[in-house]
Image (tube, rainbow, N blue to C red; front, side, top):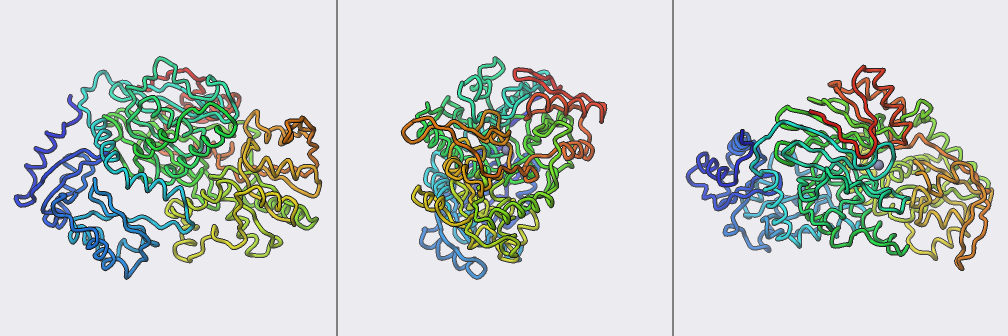
Length: 637
Ligand SMILES: [Zn+2]
C-alpha cells in the first residue's frame, strides 16, 4: 500500500475542494505542514470549516499564506498591526519574514491576544496580506533569544529551503515493506551520558537524543556509537531531542557537520537552551585547547533545521511516524517523546530524564496516553537505596544550612547546571528571602544561569500552573527579584570571594570547569563556608570526589605548580531537588502509567541501577523488562 502522496497529488486534491475564487498560486511542503499560497486570502480564512476539512482530508496540518502580490508595504503593515493589537499589549519589535510572508511581532503579553472575541491573526492577515506570528518579549533581556530569532528571520531563504526539504522527507513516497520496528542502543545504556537511540521502522530511521558524555575524553567514550553498522547518517529522517542537557543534545551539531540536513524536533524552550549549551560547549573546548567536534556554522545549521513543537501537538515527522511531546517534569521544556508508528502498528515512548513529582517550577510528568506498547525509561535512581528526601524536607535543610552559614559569617556556594536546578533553587531562595526566613544577603548568579533565567522567563507557558499564575496573573516574576546580582567578570568574582557573607550560584554543577571551580578553590579552606550539592555528580568529576568525602585535592595553581587543596568548608548534599524520579517515584510511575506497556527498557543509569530497576519492573508487572548494553538491537515488532 502506498503511504504518502506527492505534492502534485496533494495540489490536485486541494484544487478539487477549493472554492472558485480563491486563486491558489502555489502549494508547498513546509516542514510538517502544507502551505497554500493564495491571492484571495479573505475567501479562505473567512471559511473556518474549510481549512479543518482540508486538513482532515489531507491528514496534514494546513497553513494558508497570502501570495506575495497581495502583501502591503512594510510601513503600512507596522501601522495596521499597532492599530489592531496595541490596545491590549505593548509591542517591542516588528520584523518581517519575506520568504514565508510572516510579520513577526514581539509583545509583552501574547496570551492577551487569545480568546478576546476578535481574532487578531485573522484580522491582520486579511488587512495586510502578511501572516502575523506573536512572540513574547523576554522580560529579562536575552542575547540567545535575540540571536536565534535573528538567524531565523534574517536567513529566511535558507530556512524556507530547509523546511521544503524536511517536508519532502516526511512526505516521501514509501511502500511499507514487511512491518518491522526495532531500536538500537547507541549511548546512555547501562551508563549516564551520551544518550542516543536509533529507532528503525523499515520506512524511516529516527534518532532519539544525541548526547555527549561530559567528563570523558576518548571518542569511544564520549560520543554515541555512530560507528555501529545499524547507523547510517544518510538514511536518517529525523532527530528528536527530549531536552537540552548536553548528555541528550550535545552532539546534534556533529550530525550537521557530517552532512545531515533533516529536521530536529524539540520544544521551543529546548531549542534556546540547547543552542546556549552548544555554544558554551564550544567556548569551553576552545579555552581548554581541545579539538572542536563541530563549529559555530554547524550550530547555526541546527537552528535552521529545528522544528519546535508544543506539548500535546501531534506531528508527522517521517513516513509513517507521528511524534507527540508531553511534559517530563525534568527541566523547563523537557519532554517525554511518544512515537506512534505505522497507523497503530507500535507505540513507543522515551521517558528519558523525567520526574514523577511536582517541583517549584514544573508539574510532574504526564502518565496517561492513548496507546503505548514500549516504555524506555531512565534509571538514574534505580536502586532500592535511591530514596531522596521530600521537597519539604529538602527546602528545610537548605534553609537551615544557609542560615547557619550566614550567621557565622560564611559564604554559601551552590554549584549548579545553568539549565534546570538553578531556576528551581532561585525560586525557592527568592521565596525564603522575601518572607524573611533567611537573612537578606546578596545572591550572586555566575555563568550562564542569567541567560537560562531569561529563557525560562520567556516561556511561562512551560512552567507549572502555579508559577504560571504567579508570573502571568499576579505579575510576580521571581527571576526579577532585587536580591539577584549577575556576575560575569573575574574582578567581581575576586571581590565576592574577599567580601561579605553571600550566596553564590555558579556553573558547572559538577565542579567540572566554569566559575564554580574558582569559587570552590578560593572558599574551600575556610570552615565557615558551606558547599551545597543539589544535583547528580558524574563519575570522574571533581564534584563526585568531594561529594564522596575526598578532602585533600591535588590542584595546579596559576603557575602550573601542583599543590594540595585542603577542603575544610562544610560539604552538604541535598538530593531532593533533583530533576530525576527517585526509586519510589519510578515505581509509582510504573504503577500509574496508562495504558500499561507490554515492554520496558531501562536506560540512563549506572549498570546496577538499570539492571535492578528492570528486574523490579518484571517482578511488579510480569512483563518483559530489559536493561540492554550499548550495541544491542531490540526487535519491537
Ligand atoms: Zn537531563
